[in-house]
Amino acid sequence: MRTSRLVLTGAAVGTIVGTARADLNATHVFNPEWPPHARFHGAAGWGTVAGAQLVALWLLWRPASSAAEEDLAARTAALLSAVAWAPFFPALATPGTAVEDEPGHLPRVAGVPLNLVPAGLVPAVAAVGLLLHRHGR
Image (cartoon, rainbow, N blue to C red):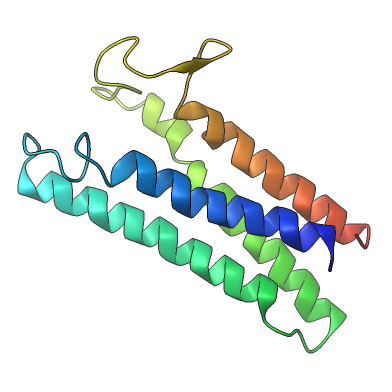
């Protein structure tokens, strides 16, 4: 089994689990203070992310008919994991948004709010997985 496949699988599964833990709880989708339409968008957004990661997993684990098809599957899976987190950064520049409801509400890693850590880490892990794939590992 190729290490690259396992690394890319970790990026996809981590994205599904991490976003579910962050969004499908009482502070987000199940927050009674959120208007129903906002909760709808939160749930739909999570479903979109989870669905894309399921596609990534399918691409990684289905039999490929050629090396070119396997390469395309790995590239697409890496891209799907990275794209799931990319919107975090432009969202920071959107007026009226915040990384957290109250400053200091989220735990920090090296001074960075916890929800921004996977937004930088998962795309990096996906890139490592793709590099491993390109080097035949």
